[in-house]
Image (cartoon, rainbow, N blue to C red; front, side):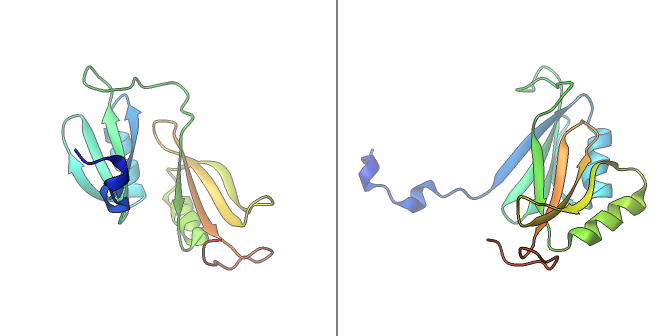
Length: 144
């Protein structure tokens, strides 16, 4: 086995990431991410469903039960933040659905150069939608 100093950065390249959320049942969470948000489903089994968020990130939905690594909790302190090009368009789309639990209305942040809103998914996880903005401006800019 080569010494750590002999290994290149490419040996430790991360190709993808999947955030796993746990639910008592999967149907409402699957509908939220698949139908309401319109994310592409990439995998499904009896105990898990995975949706693509971007080219290198996914969100996994895991059913509670004996094979699950974690238990479902009453309060979830994890937030999925989705960086989007047009946060206002996403806000209007979800508002028109009439089935989304908004936790925070759309607003510009005073502390960070973002415009965002928050919703709750069916398992109580917070999903943040935000766009980077130029400071003092509502126009989307490149990442700081």
